[in-house]
Length: 321
Ligand SMILES: [Zn+2]
Image (cartoon, rainbow, N blue to C red; front, side):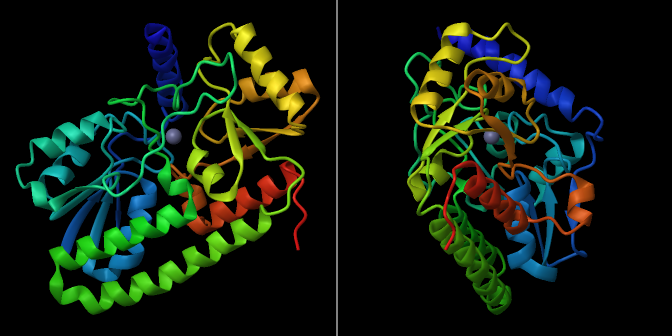
């Protein structure tokens, strides 16, 4: 069974790689002018937190090119160099990006590389629908299949912002007033977002959140939803009829009227399940990366999450007060 899951995972990884094949692999982004300290951030949400809290004191490098897939990152030479030379490295362990973990292990200075999963009470990967193979993202996360997607929960993202602030202060004590003020303003916005989610998802017709990519477990836990990912089935394979039938039965039993798929992932599976039960499909964004054109248009963690909330309220039939 494990081998089957792994094989399916590899196909998904290949698809993800193909989906972002047009982005320049060496195009790791740099935000801000030359700052007092340099930070290597493993993927977009961390980069945004560092950029916002650090302001002009910090030069941040995102190891993932804009719009690229964060999972199972293949390090570009530029990204590897950034990990080696940065004053501070902020990453996720637990097999989320093993290439980053290896580069961090070779860095030597352990204190200035922080695994942001360390402070998180990690949830296991979901398999809530009987008969459906459980996995996270088509990838078996090393060490007991832990779900890394904590940042999708605004409250846990806020905790991460605090960790980022403290790490910047430790690396650059003179910048403490700047970091504290920037973090306070940013955290106020994140807390507003959390409150909007809590209010918006309080009274919904359905609690079952059927998604194609199991990225919304922490968010579901936070706001009383039940995530049912369509997982263990690759779009390139003949869909496993038993798993699809189980997901469809679950969705039907729970009155699901919208099946969600994720940006950056093919939506065939969501459409198959939706067609089976006569539901619509809609997109959710797990905020793992933002394409450059969307960044240029002002997209951020906050704007994407508000868009997610609007789609969730509509798809789950929530009465907004
Ligand atoms: Zn993911």
